Image 1: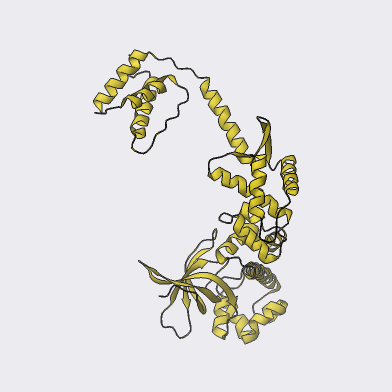
Image 2: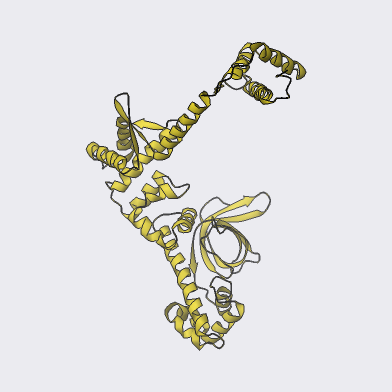
Length: 380
């Protein structure tokens, strides 16, 4: 199959798999004039058998399950036939409407059924067997379904992929449109997989100004996150501001250094950023990194208070016995590390691939166990 964008429209015949948490779905689609059902795979906020969907995506060949249509975008369309409408309503998509009730509604209203539900839903009371209480339940369920659809249409209309749109809806629910409209950069904090650059593109599509304070704040935290990826818990304030200015700059926009500096200071005042003095300059942390580093330092300090003074002769005798029994040959450096471990509360073992770290570590662990075991030969 060609690896380019293609389009399908059809009715969801059945769901093979659907995750309520992520929206990931494997479904079978009935396409007009096609003899066989088509397997479609993608992320859907809410999907049920009977829905008529217009799909955009690409074909993929699965080594076990064969040809599949990988969905990148989708939208729901109204069923065009009496049978389609009945199957859609009775699919379980709308709470309070099962196959029997769906048949009664469609029998009464015919092809106008969906328009009646959309615009004059109280008229369902005209259908034999549907009481006012049931109408109220159906009305609530239909409004929920409409809200999901509105969110998905809004997000996809602003360049948000189906995968991310589903994640956004799962996280924010009916507040999705408001959250994304007011501060799309919040997505970089709340939604796994959406970073600064994706949020920035969504913000551009929505029309958020590039000079927005939301954008500046997101850029500052992105720089700290990138530093963490390189192994740094913090950045000096001048370096953080310099990196943020570089990140936020565009061909037609240059951030004001004074403004960025004020935002960094304000984040510190609001406890969204931890700023500490170190050797004559200020350093900036994300709060999570600061508290993690602080707790780790406290734990290391506690460990250092534990003193170990084993008899060196017994340590060497134990090492000789252990390595002989297991036919292990420790290099001088490895043996030195094991001997140091016997006297150390904290030990850092480093080395490149193939230098014997695993063997050394196993020996150290066995030594520590022996030192802590009152019945061990180490004690005798």
